[in-house]
Length: 388
Image (tube, rainbow, N blue to C red; front, side):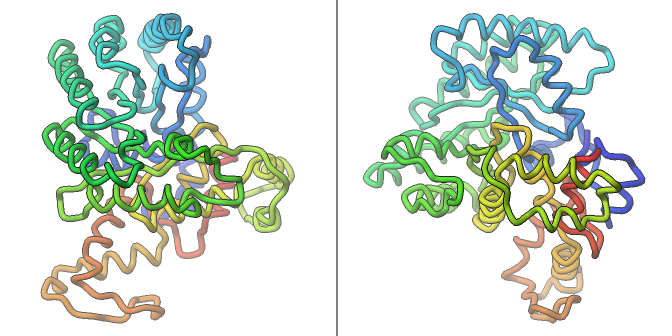
């Protein structure tokens, strides 16, 4: 699989200075964590889930979470588990099927071992489990169960803990809880692929819900938690983990000013009205701002609850030619001693030592999302993806 692999090779050549790399579910954890991108959630109750999964993979989705937790009613859990087993068997029987990275969001540690056993041959299509309401106390049983399932099935399984508990939000218990989470995920470091932020649960604890013109970073109580999570768990010194961006809840608002930009894209090729309508039916402005703020605050990838969010996340994850030029310049071997130099774009100063960690992360993102050509921006990447 690869990002933007659903669009024609000749179009990718027009878009990319350096194309996204190929990878598989068996690639290194470092690469997979960076490549998660827009992780699309789907209720595990969907009757045609196998078809839905392959449909979304054909549209550029790289990772999906099949949810047994908050997205379904308590009374539906048993039926949803049975449906998952059937749908994985269906996928496993399709010899040419190429699903994305698949994860199951469970409710209890016991579900991990039970589902791993019940999936049978379908376990080879599973990349791991999403662990809800993660704290040190609640997280250890989940991770122990995952390790046991891995040993029993012989399948490498990753964990993606969701940081969403009130104990993490509340100021008086936040420091202690962050320290406990850090101890736990460090102990199981080889199994923890990424940490996910449950901002909806954070807002719920205070009866809040951000409107579509505001980002998570405009809700200060939420922004403070994101900052502290990155501070403790997202460091660039080798101790940190990939932390993914929060969910964007909205997918239909009034027409926005994005329309004129879209109409001018050279990739529309006679489909301007169709593609314009595809965008204006969904909110775009707030989502785009939040994706940019995610990256500015040290987050990579994003939880998504609607397919229309996937391409904007991926388009804004592509490394610009200017970013790539700066990162390569900073990391040249002859720069090892430090120093400051003017960028190749002559619009900024690059400091070798302070900017090294940024440059390393930028090249990691470039590996999986690619580097755009000099004249290619978000609009071109988005519209090419929509028409792929």
